[in-house]
Length: 475
Picture (tube, rainbow, N blue to C red):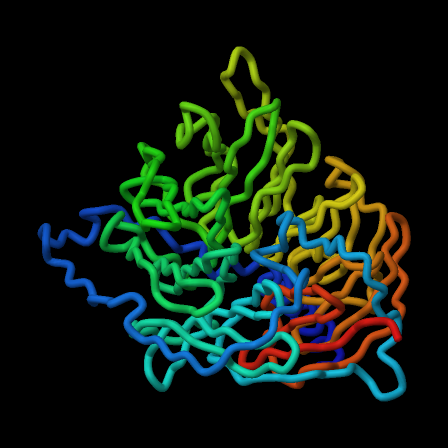
């Protein structure tokens, strides 16, 4: 009888405790206790901070040249049009085949999640070489994987869920990088020779983000656009001279996030839209008011932001973040050249589209993404929504197909989706149904979070410690 009484009271208690532990794990926010650091909060006297001197571009080695492969271009974060969609008319595989993925080459990298950029047969990736404590821009042949040159500088880093995270931007003449501790570097695209550098911490009082820099530089018309935080919210740098040509004031002292600056045209006005730590804003990208803040909102200001802002409709932008932040829809209105920003809707991860790390894909009036672990039954699934209705999913991959924090890309009417453990799924593009064509484990490593690149029938991917090139052309 004593045993029955014990089971009667203790068993329900253990069940409740187990449920509480699971719920607590799902809702745990590792950055909930963060607070934005402000000048003077540490009560140190002015001038007490000693910064490590960094000689940007001090280390340069040229190995060899390679032939161009014209038209093979994935020149920056999310591709030429910054939408993560390949527009090339090249037929790609639907099945991995009986021999599995065709790996052309692979190279070891320092620990990180930085993705590659490609320009006319050359692959550019920002790496961290731990043996020499160096940020290093490395250039490889797309066809063979041979290293062509490298240019970098000494800077000390400690592991923090990886080191390098950013993607270079490549133009006809230049390659622009931003290192983990906010050093911006410009080199010659072909030779890799150093042109100029800018340390945002020393020049603009930029605060290095918690997991190092995640912002990928944007270049338009040979001007590099960088959201610095600190003394200025955003700046434009002449790629030829390295001189700052315009600055955006930062009256609210917003900080640099892991998000990247995205160009948009709203109500006929070109602007740079950015999700900072503190709020979201649009900065004029053209005309006599270039660099001026056109609109801003503090209605969505998580402590950590990684995905970039998306334009879902002609005047509705979408922003999302992880660790329970969810997402927001912002409607922009223009009247006489002045913009206002109104919050339309906010969603928790259980209520609508959200993303912790990757920026969703907008295509043909639909938006696609992988939901975070706190999204309930849909957690980890690849999900589609119609237009700005980011509450009601019209397509999902299902309970058996979950992808964690991995990247995804759209090419030849197919999604290529990489999960955390290096398994790549090929799925047929559809607005209403998710159809797996094939999948294969390609990398045996871990934390396969670096963004993908597809061009010329080549697919570039990485895990935390190596990069691979696959031939995915249909035979």
